[in-house]
Length: 304
Image (cartoon, rainbow, N blue to C red; front, top):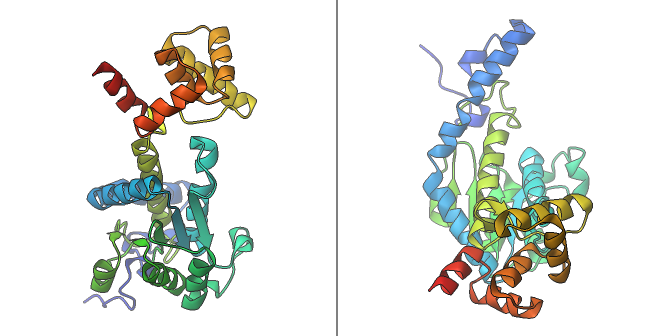
């Protein structure tokens, strides 16, 4: 008879399929890790309704002028900071719009801050420091589901009126479902190396965060078709991408696209509206505001 696990959390249980992984060849290790990784996407797929809810909450947050603040410790915290830091260069967002908080602060990104995750009070204090309020959405990340720092932050954020979300890779307790506004729990199973949640749980976390942030950016008009149109041409790579977007969507030659981009102040979205309406930069900005920033909706308005 098999023994009951000493820890009920999936992230802390031993994986029977890798019990003798230390005896395997390099190729066999790669094969078994790859086989386990194939469990990740199906686990995330079970959470699509909850992920969609988080996307809607993030969209509402941004339209109200609020912030999406990820909170985590260790790998979970680093992944939150990573996702937040990629938004300004990718979608031209204000750096305040997406934020990542990691237990132990900036130094914990590069070096483990042992014990930092154990303080509920420290997590709550950061919410006070950031003056979290009712327009904000605080999203906690804890693969094991039990990190005190994260729950302390979420508790304080809720007290301050913010919306709250939680991502974990083990079965959520009922109180989490009752207290937090959305709970996402992709159950990827025990790790290849017991407790090493930077592996399957970390990959699942990145998939979910990518879906939430990307979905919110699409919903708020940062994407037209599947093109990242709400970017600013601040370096050579982005200038080239901006010009190519204008060439493709507006059927322009490179020089014409370059001139239009210059007149728009380097904004692809503004340039597109200027071209469609034959207007100046200011009028184009008004048209965009009228459509809630969504180019697709602006096309529908004009067509109507």
